[in-house]
Length: 170
Length: 423
Image 1 (cartoon, chains in turn red, cyan):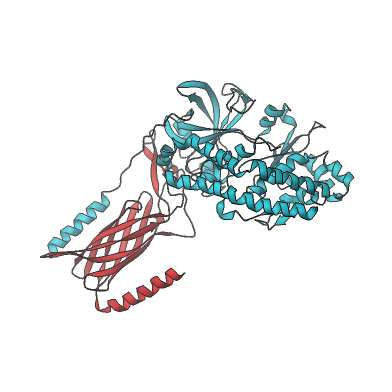
Image 2: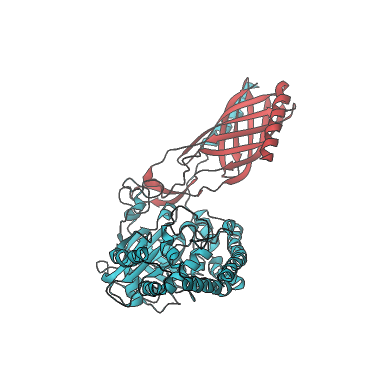
Protein backbone atom coordinates (compact mmCIF):
# COMPACT_ATOMS: atom_id res chain seq x y z
CA UNK A 1 0.00 0.00 0.00
CA UNK A 2 2.88 2.32 0.87
CA UNK A 3 4.44 1.70 -2.55
CA UNK A 4 1.16 2.61 -4.29
CA UNK A 5 0.91 5.82 -2.25
CA UNK A 6 4.46 6.79 -3.19
CA UNK A 7 3.78 6.11 -6.88
CA UNK A 8 0.57 8.19 -6.82
CA UNK A 9 2.40 11.02 -5.04
CA UNK A 10 5.23 10.96 -7.56
CA UNK A 11 2.76 10.91 -10.45
CA UNK A 12 0.96 13.96 -9.00
CA UNK A 13 4.26 15.78 -8.61
CA UNK A 14 5.31 14.87 -12.13
CA UNK A 15 1.98 16.02 -13.55
CA UNK A 16 2.32 19.32 -11.69
CA UNK A 17 5.92 19.69 -12.69
CA UNK A 18 5.21 18.82 -16.26
CA UNK A 19 2.66 21.51 -16.90
CA UNK A 20 5.21 23.55 -18.72
CA UNK A 21 6.66 20.45 -20.44
CA UNK A 22 5.47 18.14 -23.17
CA UNK A 23 2.82 15.44 -22.71
CA UNK A 24 2.03 12.61 -25.15
CA UNK A 25 -1.35 10.88 -24.92
CA UNK A 26 -1.73 7.87 -27.17
CA UNK A 27 -4.09 5.06 -28.04
CA UNK A 28 -2.28 1.77 -28.32
CA UNK A 29 -3.10 -1.43 -30.13
CA UNK A 30 -1.55 -4.87 -30.01
CA UNK A 31 -2.64 -8.15 -31.46
CA UNK A 32 -1.65 -11.75 -31.32
CA UNK A 33 -3.35 -15.01 -32.13
CA UNK A 34 -7.06 -14.71 -31.19
CA UNK A 35 -6.38 -11.56 -29.12
CA UNK A 36 -7.11 -7.92 -29.93
CA UNK A 37 -5.80 -5.55 -27.35
CA UNK A 38 -6.54 -1.80 -27.30
CA UNK A 39 -5.04 0.41 -24.62
CA UNK A 40 -3.95 3.83 -23.47
CA UNK A 41 -0.45 5.20 -22.99
CA UNK A 42 0.86 8.51 -21.78
CA UNK A 43 4.30 10.03 -21.47
CA UNK A 44 4.77 13.11 -19.37
CA UNK A 45 8.01 15.09 -19.63
CA UNK A 46 9.28 16.45 -16.35
CA UNK A 47 12.26 18.13 -17.98
CA UNK A 48 13.02 19.01 -21.60
CA UNK A 49 14.69 15.64 -22.13
CA UNK A 50 13.22 13.18 -19.62
CA UNK A 51 9.79 12.03 -18.48
CA UNK A 52 7.78 9.14 -17.21
CA UNK A 53 5.68 6.85 -19.35
CA UNK A 54 2.89 4.50 -18.37
CA UNK A 55 0.14 2.53 -20.02
CA UNK A 56 -2.57 -0.02 -19.63
CA UNK A 57 -4.46 -2.24 -22.04
CA UNK A 58 -7.40 -4.60 -22.11
CA UNK A 59 -8.16 -7.48 -24.48
CA UNK A 60 -10.92 -9.03 -26.55
CA UNK A 61 -10.88 -12.67 -27.57
CA UNK A 62 -11.72 -13.59 -31.12
CA UNK A 63 -11.22 -17.33 -31.55
CA UNK A 64 -12.66 -20.38 -33.27
CA UNK A 65 -13.42 -23.01 -30.58
CA UNK A 66 -12.32 -25.85 -32.83
CA UNK A 67 -8.82 -24.38 -32.86
CA UNK A 68 -8.36 -24.26 -29.09
CA UNK A 69 -7.67 -26.95 -26.48
CA UNK A 70 -7.96 -24.66 -23.45
CA UNK A 71 -8.40 -21.09 -22.41
CA UNK A 72 -7.54 -19.59 -19.04
CA UNK A 73 -9.57 -16.44 -19.43
CA UNK A 74 -10.37 -14.51 -16.25
CA UNK A 75 -13.88 -13.20 -16.91
CA UNK A 76 -13.72 -10.72 -14.05
CA UNK A 77 -10.35 -9.15 -14.81
CA UNK A 78 -9.83 -8.05 -18.35
CA UNK A 79 -6.63 -6.09 -17.88
CA UNK A 80 -4.14 -7.53 -20.36
CA UNK A 81 -1.01 -5.65 -19.46
CA UNK A 82 0.32 -2.62 -17.62
CA UNK A 83 3.62 -0.85 -18.06
CA UNK A 84 5.56 1.94 -16.44
CA UNK A 85 8.94 3.46 -17.24
CA UNK A 86 10.87 6.45 -18.49
CA UNK A 87 10.75 8.35 -21.76
CA UNK A 88 13.14 10.79 -23.36
CA UNK A 89 14.49 12.41 -26.51
CA UNK A 90 16.65 9.96 -28.42
CA UNK A 91 17.39 11.85 -31.57
CA UNK A 92 16.90 15.42 -32.71
CA UNK A 93 19.07 15.57 -35.80
CA UNK A 94 18.20 17.85 -38.69
CA UNK A 95 14.82 16.59 -39.98
CA UNK A 96 14.46 13.50 -37.80
CA UNK A 97 13.06 13.58 -34.25
CA UNK A 98 12.77 10.35 -32.31
CA UNK A 99 11.75 9.72 -28.70
CA UNK A 100 12.29 6.55 -26.71
CA UNK A 101 10.48 4.76 -23.88
CA UNK A 102 11.92 2.08 -21.62
CA UNK A 103 10.33 0.40 -18.63
CA UNK A 104 8.75 -2.74 -17.32
CA UNK A 105 5.58 -4.49 -18.49
CA UNK A 106 3.44 -7.14 -16.81
CA UNK A 107 0.99 -9.33 -18.71
CA UNK A 108 -1.91 -11.21 -17.19
CA UNK A 109 -4.15 -13.00 -19.61
CA UNK A 110 -4.18 -15.65 -22.29
CA UNK A 111 -1.34 -16.33 -24.68
CA UNK A 112 -1.98 -18.75 -27.51
CA UNK A 113 0.75 -20.95 -28.92
CA UNK A 114 0.47 -23.44 -31.77
CA UNK A 115 0.19 -27.03 -30.52
CA UNK A 116 -0.63 -29.17 -33.53
CA UNK A 117 -1.24 -28.83 -37.25
CA UNK A 118 -4.57 -30.50 -38.07
CA UNK A 119 -3.65 -31.83 -41.49
CA UNK A 120 -7.06 -32.99 -42.74
CA UNK A 121 -8.59 -29.54 -42.13
CA UNK A 122 -5.46 -27.53 -42.86
CA UNK A 123 -5.35 -25.38 -39.74
CA UNK A 124 -3.39 -25.12 -36.52
CA UNK A 125 -4.70 -26.12 -33.10
CA UNK A 126 -3.59 -23.76 -30.31
CA UNK A 127 -3.22 -23.95 -26.55
CA UNK A 128 -3.26 -21.20 -23.96
CA UNK A 129 0.26 -21.22 -22.58
CA UNK A 130 -0.35 -18.57 -19.93
CA UNK A 131 -2.24 -20.62 -17.26
CA UNK A 132 -3.01 -17.09 -15.92
CA UNK A 133 0.52 -16.61 -14.64
CA UNK A 134 1.78 -13.01 -14.80
CA UNK A 135 4.67 -12.49 -17.23
CA UNK A 136 7.11 -9.69 -16.45
CA UNK A 137 9.60 -8.19 -18.90
CA UNK A 138 11.30 -5.11 -20.30
CA UNK A 139 9.15 -2.78 -22.38
CA UNK A 140 10.80 -0.45 -24.91
CA UNK A 141 9.62 1.73 -27.74
CA UNK A 142 10.30 4.44 -30.27
CA UNK A 143 8.01 7.42 -30.90
CA UNK A 144 8.03 9.84 -33.79
CA UNK A 145 6.20 13.19 -33.57
CA UNK A 146 4.48 14.39 -36.74
CA UNK A 147 3.06 17.92 -36.43
CA UNK A 148 0.74 17.80 -33.39
CA UNK A 149 0.52 14.03 -33.64
CA UNK A 150 2.77 11.29 -32.39
CA UNK A 151 3.10 7.65 -33.43
CA UNK A 152 5.30 4.81 -32.39
CA UNK A 153 5.99 1.16 -31.86
CA UNK A 154 6.83 -0.70 -28.68
CA UNK A 155 8.32 -4.11 -28.05
CA UNK A 156 8.36 -6.09 -24.83
CA UNK A 157 10.39 -9.05 -23.69
CA UNK A 158 7.61 -10.33 -21.39
CA UNK A 159 5.82 -11.97 -24.32
CA UNK A 160 7.88 -10.69 -27.26
CA UNK A 161 5.03 -8.58 -28.56
CA UNK A 162 4.85 -5.40 -30.62
CA UNK A 163 2.38 -2.62 -29.88
CA UNK A 164 1.38 0.25 -32.10
CA UNK A 165 0.82 3.75 -30.67
CA UNK A 166 -0.97 6.74 -32.19
CA UNK A 167 -1.86 9.96 -30.37
CA UNK A 168 -1.27 13.63 -29.83
CA UNK A 169 1.24 15.66 -27.92
CA UNK A 170 0.58 18.84 -26.00
CA UNK B 1 11.15 16.98 -41.82
CA UNK B 2 7.57 15.70 -42.14
CA UNK B 3 8.48 13.28 -44.90
CA UNK B 4 11.29 11.72 -42.87
CA UNK B 5 9.15 11.15 -39.81
CA UNK B 6 6.35 9.72 -41.98
CA UNK B 7 8.87 7.22 -43.32
CA UNK B 8 9.91 6.31 -39.80
CA UNK B 9 6.28 5.74 -38.87
CA UNK B 10 5.60 3.58 -41.94
CA UNK B 11 8.57 1.38 -41.11
CA UNK B 12 7.22 0.90 -37.56
CA UNK B 13 3.72 -0.02 -38.80
CA UNK B 14 5.07 -2.50 -41.34
CA UNK B 15 7.17 -4.13 -38.61
CA UNK B 16 4.07 -4.48 -36.42
CA UNK B 17 1.92 -6.28 -38.98
CA UNK B 18 4.64 -8.59 -40.25
CA UNK B 19 5.62 -10.10 -36.91
CA UNK B 20 3.15 -13.02 -36.39
CA UNK B 21 4.52 -16.47 -36.99
CA UNK B 22 3.40 -20.09 -36.54
CA UNK B 23 5.84 -22.68 -35.31
CA UNK B 24 5.29 -26.08 -33.75
CA UNK B 25 8.02 -27.17 -31.35
CA UNK B 26 9.62 -30.46 -32.25
CA UNK B 27 10.67 -32.27 -29.06
CA UNK B 28 12.25 -35.65 -28.47
CA UNK B 29 12.42 -37.15 -24.99
CA UNK B 30 15.68 -37.89 -23.16
CA UNK B 31 15.04 -41.64 -22.93
CA UNK B 32 15.17 -41.56 -19.12
CA UNK B 33 11.48 -42.50 -18.71
CA UNK B 34 9.36 -45.19 -20.35
CA UNK B 35 7.31 -43.99 -23.31
CA UNK B 36 3.61 -44.54 -23.77
CA UNK B 37 2.90 -44.02 -27.45
CA UNK B 38 -0.73 -43.42 -28.46
CA UNK B 39 -1.94 -43.62 -32.04
CA UNK B 40 -5.46 -42.42 -32.81
CA UNK B 41 -7.31 -41.08 -35.84
CA UNK B 42 -6.61 -37.35 -35.68
CA UNK B 43 -10.29 -36.50 -36.29
CA UNK B 44 -11.09 -38.16 -32.95
CA UNK B 45 -8.84 -35.64 -31.25
CA UNK B 46 -9.17 -32.43 -33.22
CA UNK B 47 -12.37 -32.28 -35.28
CA UNK B 48 -14.76 -29.45 -34.37
CA UNK B 49 -17.86 -31.56 -33.72
CA UNK B 50 -16.41 -34.75 -32.23
CA UNK B 51 -12.78 -34.02 -31.34
CA UNK B 52 -11.95 -35.17 -27.79
CA UNK B 53 -9.23 -32.68 -27.10
CA UNK B 54 -10.61 -29.34 -28.33
CA UNK B 55 -13.15 -26.85 -27.02
CA UNK B 56 -14.99 -27.49 -30.28
CA UNK B 57 -18.63 -26.88 -31.12
CA UNK B 58 -20.37 -29.86 -29.49
CA UNK B 59 -19.40 -29.34 -25.89
CA UNK B 60 -20.73 -29.82 -22.40
CA UNK B 61 -20.47 -27.57 -19.35
CA UNK B 62 -18.24 -28.62 -16.44
CA UNK B 63 -15.50 -26.13 -15.57
CA UNK B 64 -14.40 -23.24 -17.78
CA UNK B 65 -15.97 -22.95 -21.23
CA UNK B 66 -18.52 -25.38 -22.70
CA UNK B 67 -16.20 -27.80 -24.39
CA UNK B 68 -15.94 -31.10 -26.25
CA UNK B 69 -13.28 -32.23 -23.77
CA UNK B 70 -15.92 -32.34 -21.00
CA UNK B 71 -17.83 -35.07 -22.86
CA UNK B 72 -17.44 -38.73 -21.88
CA UNK B 73 -16.59 -39.69 -25.44
CA UNK B 74 -14.45 -42.75 -26.04
CA UNK B 75 -12.64 -43.58 -29.28
CA UNK B 76 -10.51 -46.53 -30.38
CA UNK B 77 -6.76 -46.06 -30.16
CA UNK B 78 -3.60 -48.09 -30.15
CA UNK B 79 -1.11 -47.82 -27.27
CA UNK B 80 2.38 -49.18 -26.94
CA UNK B 81 4.51 -49.03 -23.84
CA UNK B 82 8.20 -48.80 -24.65
CA UNK B 83 11.22 -48.78 -22.35
CA UNK B 84 14.71 -48.27 -23.72
CA UNK B 85 13.61 -49.33 -27.18
CA UNK B 86 11.86 -52.51 -26.02
CA UNK B 87 8.09 -52.74 -26.59
CA UNK B 88 6.57 -53.96 -23.31
CA UNK B 89 3.00 -54.08 -24.57
CA UNK B 90 1.07 -53.03 -27.63
CA UNK B 91 -2.71 -52.93 -27.20
CA UNK B 92 -5.95 -51.68 -28.73
CA UNK B 93 -7.91 -49.57 -26.22
CA UNK B 94 -10.61 -46.96 -25.86
CA UNK B 95 -9.30 -43.45 -25.19
CA UNK B 96 -11.09 -40.79 -23.15
CA UNK B 97 -10.30 -37.42 -21.62
CA UNK B 98 -10.38 -37.80 -17.82
CA UNK B 99 -10.40 -35.60 -14.75
CA UNK B 100 -12.67 -32.97 -13.23
CA UNK B 101 -11.77 -29.32 -13.52
CA UNK B 102 -8.22 -30.23 -14.56
CA UNK B 103 -9.67 -30.84 -18.04
CA UNK B 104 -9.25 -27.10 -18.62
CA UNK B 105 -5.46 -27.58 -18.65
CA UNK B 106 -3.69 -27.71 -21.96
CA UNK B 107 -2.15 -31.12 -21.20
CA UNK B 108 -5.18 -33.24 -20.38
CA UNK B 109 -5.49 -36.45 -18.40
CA UNK B 110 -6.31 -39.48 -20.52
CA UNK B 111 -8.09 -42.73 -19.69
CA UNK B 112 -7.21 -46.04 -21.33
CA UNK B 113 -10.06 -48.58 -21.45
CA UNK B 114 -9.51 -52.24 -22.27
CA UNK B 115 -12.63 -53.82 -23.84
CA UNK B 116 -13.35 -56.92 -25.92
CA UNK B 117 -14.56 -54.83 -28.85
CA UNK B 118 -11.12 -53.23 -29.23
CA UNK B 119 -9.04 -56.40 -28.71
CA UNK B 120 -8.06 -57.76 -25.30
CA UNK B 121 -10.56 -57.24 -22.48
CA UNK B 122 -7.68 -56.74 -20.00
CA UNK B 123 -4.06 -55.69 -20.09
CA UNK B 124 -1.91 -58.54 -18.78
CA UNK B 125 1.31 -56.79 -17.80
CA UNK B 126 2.88 -55.77 -14.43
CA UNK B 127 2.85 -52.01 -15.08
CA UNK B 128 3.74 -50.94 -11.52
CA UNK B 129 6.91 -52.43 -10.10
CA UNK B 130 5.79 -52.21 -6.44
CA UNK B 131 2.52 -54.00 -7.06
CA UNK B 132 1.69 -57.69 -7.19
CA UNK B 133 -1.11 -56.94 -9.67
CA UNK B 134 -0.43 -57.64 -13.33
CA UNK B 135 -3.89 -57.40 -14.89
CA UNK B 136 -5.75 -54.15 -15.58
CA UNK B 137 -9.07 -53.12 -17.13
CA UNK B 138 -8.39 -49.38 -16.91
CA UNK B 139 -5.31 -47.17 -16.70
CA UNK B 140 -5.16 -43.47 -16.13
CA UNK B 141 -2.60 -41.11 -17.67
CA UNK B 142 -2.76 -38.31 -15.16
CA UNK B 143 -1.60 -34.76 -15.88
CA UNK B 144 -1.10 -34.23 -12.11
CA UNK B 145 -4.55 -32.65 -11.80
CA UNK B 146 -4.58 -29.26 -10.11
CA UNK B 147 -0.83 -29.62 -9.70
CA UNK B 148 -0.29 -29.49 -13.48
CA UNK B 149 2.43 -26.97 -14.24
CA UNK B 150 3.44 -26.77 -10.56
CA UNK B 151 5.41 -29.62 -8.93
CA UNK B 152 3.98 -32.28 -11.26
CA UNK B 153 4.70 -34.88 -8.54
CA UNK B 154 2.52 -33.90 -5.58
CA UNK B 155 -0.08 -36.67 -5.59
CA UNK B 156 2.41 -39.42 -6.42
CA UNK B 157 4.84 -38.17 -3.75
CA UNK B 158 2.12 -38.31 -1.09
CA UNK B 159 1.18 -41.72 -2.39
CA UNK B 160 4.74 -42.99 -2.02
CA UNK B 161 5.13 -41.41 1.45
CA UNK B 162 2.06 -43.10 2.95
CA UNK B 163 1.73 -46.29 0.90
CA UNK B 164 3.77 -48.57 3.20
CA UNK B 165 1.82 -47.76 6.36
CA UNK B 166 -1.62 -46.53 5.38
CA UNK B 167 -4.53 -48.94 5.58
CA UNK B 168 -6.64 -47.68 2.69
CA UNK B 169 -6.75 -48.04 -1.06
CA UNK B 170 -4.55 -45.95 -3.36
CA UNK B 171 -3.63 -45.76 -7.02
CA UNK B 172 -0.23 -47.19 -7.89
CA UNK B 173 1.85 -44.95 -10.16
CA UNK B 174 4.77 -44.80 -12.50
CA UNK B 175 6.10 -41.78 -14.39
CA UNK B 176 6.31 -41.87 -18.17
CA UNK B 177 6.51 -39.76 -21.30
CA UNK B 178 3.51 -39.72 -23.65
CA UNK B 179 3.65 -39.39 -27.42
CA UNK B 180 0.32 -38.57 -29.06
CA UNK B 181 0.32 -39.50 -32.75
CA UNK B 182 4.13 -39.35 -32.71
CA UNK B 183 4.20 -35.87 -31.12
CA UNK B 184 5.87 -35.43 -27.73
CA UNK B 185 3.08 -34.72 -25.23
CA UNK B 186 4.95 -34.42 -21.93
CA UNK B 187 5.48 -36.17 -18.59
CA UNK B 188 2.44 -38.05 -17.30
CA UNK B 189 1.78 -40.10 -14.18
CA UNK B 190 0.50 -43.50 -15.25
CA UNK B 191 -1.98 -44.59 -12.56
CA UNK B 192 -4.49 -47.21 -11.67
CA UNK B 193 -8.07 -46.03 -12.10
CA UNK B 194 -10.50 -46.27 -9.17
CA UNK B 195 -13.50 -48.08 -10.63
CA UNK B 196 -15.34 -51.29 -9.68
CA UNK B 197 -12.68 -53.18 -11.71
CA UNK B 198 -10.00 -52.00 -9.28
CA UNK B 199 -11.64 -53.91 -6.41
CA UNK B 200 -12.22 -56.96 -8.55
CA UNK B 201 -8.53 -57.01 -9.47
CA UNK B 202 -7.13 -56.24 -6.02
CA UNK B 203 -9.55 -58.17 -3.77
CA UNK B 204 -11.13 -60.75 -6.06
CA UNK B 205 -14.69 -59.50 -5.49
CA UNK B 206 -17.27 -59.62 -8.28
CA UNK B 207 -17.42 -56.14 -9.84
CA UNK B 208 -21.23 -56.31 -9.99
CA UNK B 209 -21.30 -56.53 -6.18
CA UNK B 210 -19.20 -53.45 -5.49
CA UNK B 211 -20.81 -50.33 -4.05
CA UNK B 212 -18.38 -47.49 -4.74
CA UNK B 213 -19.65 -44.33 -3.09
CA UNK B 214 -18.67 -40.70 -3.52
CA UNK B 215 -19.55 -37.33 -2.03
CA UNK B 216 -21.11 -36.59 1.33
CA UNK B 217 -20.88 -39.19 4.10
CA UNK B 218 -24.55 -38.56 4.94
CA UNK B 219 -25.98 -38.55 1.43
CA UNK B 220 -23.53 -40.13 -1.01
CA UNK B 221 -24.03 -41.15 -4.62
CA UNK B 222 -22.65 -44.09 -6.57
CA UNK B 223 -21.44 -44.49 -10.14
CA UNK B 224 -20.90 -48.18 -9.43
CA UNK B 225 -23.46 -49.94 -7.25
CA UNK B 226 -25.85 -48.18 -4.89
CA UNK B 227 -25.65 -46.06 -1.72
CA UNK B 228 -28.78 -47.67 -0.21
CA UNK B 229 -27.01 -50.35 1.81
CA UNK B 230 -24.68 -47.76 3.33
CA UNK B 231 -27.50 -45.31 4.11
CA UNK B 232 -29.70 -48.00 5.67
CA UNK B 233 -26.96 -49.42 7.85
CA UNK B 234 -24.15 -46.97 8.63
CA UNK B 235 -25.93 -43.62 8.39
CA UNK B 236 -29.04 -44.92 10.11
CA UNK B 237 -27.03 -46.52 12.91
CA UNK B 238 -24.90 -43.45 13.53
CA UNK B 239 -27.92 -41.15 13.54
CA UNK B 240 -29.87 -43.26 16.03
CA UNK B 241 -27.25 -44.54 18.46
CA UNK B 242 -24.90 -43.10 21.03
CA UNK B 243 -21.36 -43.96 20.00
CA UNK B 244 -19.96 -43.18 23.43
CA UNK B 245 -21.35 -46.58 24.47
CA UNK B 246 -18.84 -49.36 23.97
CA UNK B 247 -21.42 -51.79 22.53
CA UNK B 248 -22.43 -49.31 19.82
CA UNK B 249 -18.81 -48.59 18.99
CA UNK B 250 -18.19 -52.33 18.63
CA UNK B 251 -21.21 -52.60 16.36
CA UNK B 252 -20.13 -49.80 14.01
CA UNK B 253 -16.77 -51.57 13.82
CA UNK B 254 -18.59 -54.45 12.15
CA UNK B 255 -19.87 -52.13 9.43
CA UNK B 256 -16.91 -49.89 8.66
CA UNK B 257 -13.19 -50.62 8.75
CA UNK B 258 -12.36 -48.18 11.54
CA UNK B 259 -8.59 -48.59 11.06
CA UNK B 260 -8.92 -47.69 7.37
CA UNK B 261 -11.05 -44.69 8.25
CA UNK B 262 -8.59 -43.48 10.91
CA UNK B 263 -5.63 -43.62 8.50
CA UNK B 264 -7.66 -41.90 5.80
CA UNK B 265 -8.60 -38.99 8.08
CA UNK B 266 -5.04 -38.70 9.42
CA UNK B 267 -3.43 -38.47 5.98
CA UNK B 268 -5.95 -35.98 4.54
CA UNK B 269 -5.80 -33.71 7.58
CA UNK B 270 -2.02 -33.85 7.96
CA UNK B 271 -1.35 -32.96 4.33
CA UNK B 272 -3.86 -30.08 4.57
CA UNK B 273 -5.90 -31.30 1.61
CA UNK B 274 -8.09 -28.30 0.72
CA UNK B 275 -9.90 -30.15 -2.09
CA UNK B 276 -11.36 -32.46 0.58
CA UNK B 277 -13.72 -33.42 2.24
CA UNK B 278 -16.15 -31.55 -0.03
CA UNK B 279 -14.59 -33.38 -3.02
CA UNK B 280 -12.46 -36.42 -3.65
CA UNK B 281 -14.05 -38.80 -1.13
CA UNK B 282 -14.61 -42.41 -2.17
CA UNK B 283 -15.40 -45.46 -0.10
CA UNK B 284 -16.43 -48.96 -1.05
CA UNK B 285 -17.69 -52.36 0.02
CA UNK B 286 -18.77 -55.72 -1.45
CA UNK B 287 -22.46 -55.70 -0.61
CA UNK B 288 -22.81 -59.51 -0.80
CA UNK B 289 -19.88 -60.33 1.47
CA UNK B 290 -20.53 -60.28 5.22
CA UNK B 291 -16.82 -59.95 5.97
CA UNK B 292 -16.45 -56.88 3.75
CA UNK B 293 -16.55 -53.54 5.60
CA UNK B 294 -16.63 -50.01 4.23
CA UNK B 295 -13.09 -48.90 3.37
CA UNK B 296 -11.74 -45.61 2.03
CA UNK B 297 -9.74 -44.63 -1.04
CA UNK B 298 -7.14 -41.86 -1.15
CA UNK B 299 -6.92 -39.98 -4.46
CA UNK B 300 -6.44 -36.50 -5.99
CA UNK B 301 -4.33 -34.95 -3.22
CA UNK B 302 -2.93 -32.28 -5.57
CA UNK B 303 -4.19 -29.34 -3.51
CA UNK B 304 -2.22 -30.16 -0.37
CA UNK B 305 1.32 -29.77 1.02
CA UNK B 306 0.89 -26.01 0.42
CA UNK B 307 3.44 -23.98 2.33
CA UNK B 308 1.21 -20.90 2.56
CA UNK B 309 -1.42 -22.99 4.37
CA UNK B 310 0.91 -24.90 6.66
CA UNK B 311 -0.78 -23.63 9.81
CA UNK B 312 -4.35 -24.42 8.69
CA UNK B 313 -5.75 -27.34 10.71
CA UNK B 314 -9.17 -28.93 10.52
CA UNK B 315 -9.85 -32.36 11.99
CA UNK B 316 -13.65 -32.26 12.27
CA UNK B 317 -14.94 -31.49 15.75
CA UNK B 318 -11.58 -32.45 17.26
CA UNK B 319 -9.77 -29.22 16.40
CA UNK B 320 -9.63 -26.39 13.89
CA UNK B 321 -11.92 -24.37 11.70
CA UNK B 322 -13.61 -25.71 8.55
CA UNK B 323 -11.88 -24.85 5.27
CA UNK B 324 -15.35 -24.69 3.71
CA UNK B 325 -19.03 -24.85 4.61
CA UNK B 326 -19.52 -28.52 3.81
CA UNK B 327 -18.97 -30.24 7.13
CA UNK B 328 -21.11 -33.27 6.27
CA UNK B 329 -18.06 -35.26 5.25
CA UNK B 330 -16.84 -35.42 8.85
CA UNK B 331 -20.17 -36.99 9.79
CA UNK B 332 -18.71 -40.40 10.70
CA UNK B 333 -15.63 -38.97 12.36
CA UNK B 334 -17.58 -36.59 14.57
CA UNK B 335 -19.86 -39.42 15.71
CA UNK B 336 -16.94 -41.75 16.42
CA UNK B 337 -15.15 -39.01 18.31
CA UNK B 338 -17.71 -39.31 21.08
CA UNK B 339 -16.14 -42.63 21.97
CA UNK B 340 -13.06 -42.30 24.20
CA UNK B 341 -11.45 -45.48 22.88
CA UNK B 342 -11.76 -44.24 19.30
CA UNK B 343 -10.30 -40.87 20.24
CA UNK B 344 -7.31 -42.48 21.97
CA UNK B 345 -6.70 -44.91 19.07
CA UNK B 346 -6.97 -42.02 16.62
CA UNK B 347 -4.50 -39.77 18.45
CA UNK B 348 -2.00 -42.62 19.04
CA UNK B 349 -2.12 -43.52 15.37
CA UNK B 350 -1.80 -39.84 14.36
CA UNK B 351 1.36 -39.55 16.44
CA UNK B 352 2.73 -42.70 14.83
CA UNK B 353 2.15 -41.17 11.37
CA UNK B 354 3.83 -37.92 12.40
CA UNK B 355 6.88 -39.61 13.89
CA UNK B 356 7.36 -42.35 11.30
CA UNK B 357 5.46 -41.80 8.06
CA UNK B 358 5.93 -38.01 7.93
CA UNK B 359 9.41 -38.00 9.44
CA UNK B 360 11.15 -34.94 7.98
CA UNK B 361 14.19 -36.72 6.55
CA UNK B 362 12.13 -39.59 5.18
CA UNK B 363 9.67 -37.27 3.42
CA UNK B 364 12.45 -35.11 1.95
CA UNK B 365 14.24 -38.15 0.65
CA UNK B 366 11.08 -39.57 -0.95
CA UNK B 367 10.11 -36.27 -2.58
CA UNK B 368 13.62 -35.85 -3.99
CA UNK B 369 13.57 -39.40 -5.27
CA UNK B 370 10.29 -38.81 -7.12
CA UNK B 371 11.61 -35.52 -8.46
CA UNK B 372 14.90 -37.08 -9.61
CA UNK B 373 13.02 -39.58 -11.78
CA UNK B 374 11.79 -36.76 -14.04
CA UNK B 375 14.65 -34.30 -13.51
CA UNK B 376 16.39 -34.92 -16.83
CA UNK B 377 13.11 -34.86 -18.74
CA UNK B 378 11.75 -31.70 -17.15
CA UNK B 379 13.30 -29.25 -19.63
CA UNK B 380 11.41 -30.96 -22.48
CA UNK B 381 8.18 -30.77 -20.52
CA UNK B 382 8.78 -27.05 -19.92
CA UNK B 383 9.51 -26.50 -23.61
CA UNK B 384 6.30 -28.30 -24.62
CA UNK B 385 3.81 -26.58 -22.30
CA UNK B 386 5.50 -23.36 -21.18
CA UNK B 387 5.17 -24.42 -17.53
CA UNK B 388 7.55 -23.31 -14.75
CA UNK B 389 11.19 -23.24 -15.75
CA UNK B 390 13.68 -25.58 -14.08
CA UNK B 391 14.61 -23.28 -11.19
CA UNK B 392 10.98 -22.25 -10.53
CA UNK B 393 10.00 -25.91 -10.55
CA UNK B 394 12.76 -26.84 -8.11
CA UNK B 395 11.57 -24.01 -5.89
CA UNK B 396 8.04 -25.49 -5.86
CA UNK B 397 9.47 -28.88 -4.88
CA UNK B 398 11.45 -27.21 -2.09
CA UNK B 399 8.20 -25.66 -0.83
CA UNK B 400 6.73 -29.16 -0.47
CA UNK B 401 9.72 -30.20 1.62
CA UNK B 402 9.50 -27.03 3.72
CA UNK B 403 5.79 -27.66 4.23
CA UNK B 404 6.50 -31.03 5.82
CA UNK B 405 9.36 -29.68 7.93
CA UNK B 406 7.03 -27.09 9.45
CA UNK B 407 3.88 -29.20 9.44
CA UNK B 408 5.65 -31.98 11.30
CA UNK B 409 6.40 -29.66 14.21
CA UNK B 410 2.98 -28.01 14.21
CA UNK B 411 1.01 -31.26 14.13
CA UNK B 412 3.27 -32.98 16.63
CA UNK B 413 2.67 -30.19 19.09
CA UNK B 414 -1.12 -30.21 18.46
CA UNK B 415 -1.58 -33.97 18.65
CA UNK B 416 0.70 -34.35 21.71
CA UNK B 417 -1.32 -31.65 23.44
CA UNK B 418 -4.61 -33.39 22.59
CA UNK B 419 -3.25 -36.73 23.82
CA UNK B 420 -2.13 -35.22 27.10
CA UNK B 421 -5.56 -33.63 27.55
CA UNK B 422 -7.14 -37.07 27.10
CA UNK B 423 -4.82 -38.64 29.67
